[in-house]
Amino acid sequence: MASSKNEKGKKVIIVGGGLVGALNACFLAKRGFQVEVYERRPDIRTQEVVKGRSINLALSCRGREALRAVGLEEKITGEGIPMFARMIHNLDGSKKSIPYGKRDQSIMSVDRRHLNELLLSAAEKYDNVTLHFNHKITRCDFEKPQATFLREDEGTTVEVPGDLIMGCDGAYSSVRQQLMKTTRFDFSQEYIPHGYLELSIPANKQNEYAMELNYLHIWPRNTFMMIALPNPDKTFVGTLFMPFKIFDSIKTNDDLMKFFKDKFPDSIPLMGEEALKESYFRVKALPLVSIKCSPYHVSDKAVLMGDAAHAMVPFYGQGMNCGFEDCLVFDGIMTKYKNDFSKVLPEYTDTRNIDAKAMCDLAMYNYIEMRESVNSKMFLLRKHVDNM
Ligand code: FAD
Image 1 (cartoon, rainbow, N blue to C red):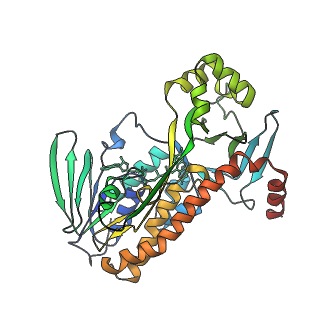
Image 2: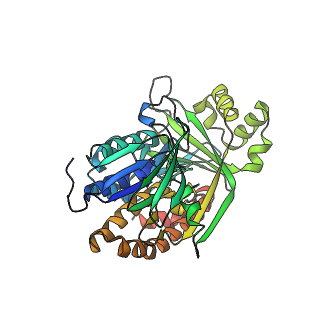
Image 3: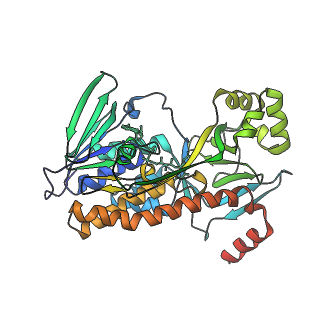
């Protein structure tokens, strides 16, 4: 793929080949930088099973705009499933739908692994991008700058000098940990009392979707909730969000079935009793963390993006979208300052930090809206007026 020649020779080291790192590689390659992506995991495109977080994600406007800028929007949305409304599942088995916007407006359900694979392959198409897998960052020297990686498969260490280090290594970012050793770096994290666990809703006996397709299904139960997003293979992935206290109190198959019969009775025939028991006890519920930090950069040598900069709880469906938008915002500032990192990085922190922190707060608020306020009369009335 063609790239501009003006930055040929300058090297950007991207740490993390997840969603944001892989997209960032496309943006920087287009500008003509030599881009090297270092990812801790093996190449997911060659793996049978990939361990990790949520199986599918909601892609919205914010993320689509960033994908459009590198010519990937159509490819990715073409493989996603539009969700035009929430479908609320009441305790008595009745359902009601609440649109997200006007008739043709939707968010998209996309498969996380497939999306990551598409982004890695798109990055690799640029001649000036190299992907390195099984490379775990262990140290950053922000003066030079230089990054040290452990090749976990070989047990060897590699030192990589460059012009800019981009930390796209997720919520538990090692680059951020190194940044915390620099002076006047603010950091806060908050684990919420709730965790999440994924459950599957298979295709029905006619090999069709077991529920209405173009919806984000929600079972709001005030202090906890379950949601489900559709996949192209006619299944749904359900995610149960609830306090660890409740997860811990469910110890046996009988406890589980009593809980589901009380709280989510309509979901039992959809999942199947045996499958529900099997998948509930197979894995442990995972924690949810919200992270804020500032600044996002060190001089003109390093910058954090995506969850490394602003992990948020998933209830606003904006973590990835916000990370994709980081790439777009950064790209705009690069244009403004003609790729001069000494001007770009401080302005990136100044403009992005306040917005990303607001997104973290909105995500926290939306948990209350999703599990509780969607049940209230005021919410329904407001939505009705919004859609008139
Ligand atoms: P990651 O996806 O975490 O990628 C980081 C990469 O860095 C990984 O590949 C990792 O292996 C690599 N890495 C880590 N450490 C190192 C190291 N030391 N050296 C080298 N590489 C390293 N967002 C949405 O927009 N919509 C949703 O619907 C949505 N739903 C979600 C549901 C759940 C249950 C959860 C938990 C999150 C959800 N999110 C959603 C948030 C979304 O998953 C994240 O915001 C997104 O994955 C962030 O991308 P990232 O590339 O910054 O980080």
